Length: 61
Image 1 (cartoon, rainbow, N blue to C red):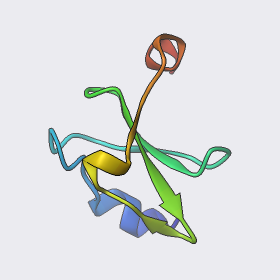
Image 2: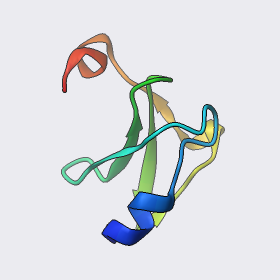
Image 3: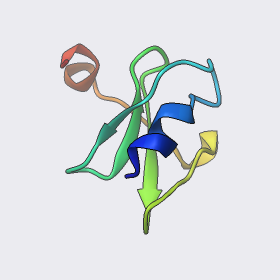
């Protein structure tokens, strides 16, 4: 994921900061507890494509 692109992306729900999980290819919004997929290098910033973080994922830093 391009660092410049990551710096300008925001959560589509709360407009908060996103963290990139390279292993899972997801952009994580801790505030909303959502993970948005990154497919072929393209972030899919749609609520209906996102998954809800598990309780353990929400607590992890």
